[in-house]
Amino acid sequence: MDNNLSKFSMQVDLTSFIPATDDEKKYIVTMRPSTTFFHDGIERLKKNRVALVSFFIIVLITLMAVFIPMLWPYKYEEMLGMQPGKPMDASFNNLRPFEYSSTEEQRIEEGEKVFPHLFGTDSQGRDYFIRVVYGTRISLAVGFFASIIVLVIGIIVGSISGYAGGMVDIIIMRIVDIIYSLPDMLMVILLAAVLRQRLSPVIEGTVLAGIGANIISLFVIFALLYWVSMSRLVRGQILSLREQEYVLAAKTAGAKGGWIIRKHLIPNCISVIVISTALQIPSAIFTESYLSFLGLGVNAPMPSLGSLASDALNGLSSYPYRLVIPAVVISLIVLSLNLFGDGLRDAFDPKLNG
Image 1 (spheres, rainbow, N blue to C red):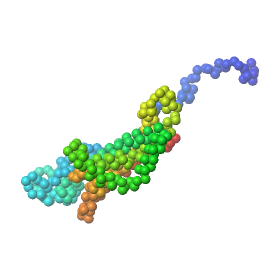
Image 2: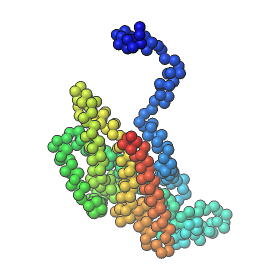
Image 3: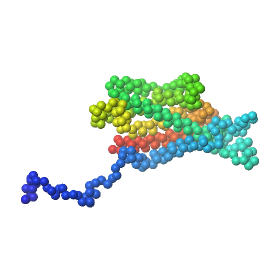
Image 4: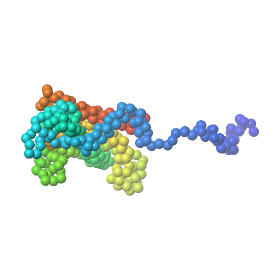
């Protein structure tokens, strides 16, 4: 049959169904292993050196804050010049880094080993290094748990608002707008001062008394004011996801709204939630630090990086390093968390990665 006439033939060309050779299969098949969104994000994160260095700095600071107080010979509240049945030894007060008191120098001359004071001591004879380490632990713990509170409230409120829509969405968003219109700094200071007085008699004699009214009031402040950004973010994500086919299929199958939110909507915006939470932690740490600096943070003698910086103002001209050290630690923690959060956003945000 003529080749030109064979083009118009209704018969099947059997030569088109010859099995492909091995070389043809290698050419056609994409030689790339199967992967997931999380795995791709981790691979992109590994290529971001700034984010990796920031992550290791955060891990190192956290490990030091957790384990050093267990091994350090001095306690954060221990006044070294205070001995039972003896008068106060003032030689322990205001020691400079690696400086020993007269009592310790005498013990060294007698052949006894005395552990050095790496950052010296404060005006009450307490080892300053362990107070900085313990203050770092308090600041990290407050930042972490405050971010968890913001995460939980923001996800619950934002998911209900975005999924329900209508009047429910309007009412919730108006509440969010009202909270946004309040001056943050003024409201935080006022609430911290009021809640501290109200909570102190309530928690007295309970397990919460060990935490302190100031820390609990700080958590209450985050629960009242700082969830609005997370809720708006979650609401926006759910508004764009609730019209997807898999959500409509779940509704058709009779699934309830709570199940759809838990099983479909929240898992599909988890990357945005993780990124926002990572960026919320340094904000919480900074809030705790300036409240402690103003005297509205942790209860004495428990240290915080903000309270240590506040106490250092009294002897700023003579001992400036007492202000510099906690300020540097706060800056390092906040900067590392912000850079790591930016790295997470660059790695896991689909809009930034096509």
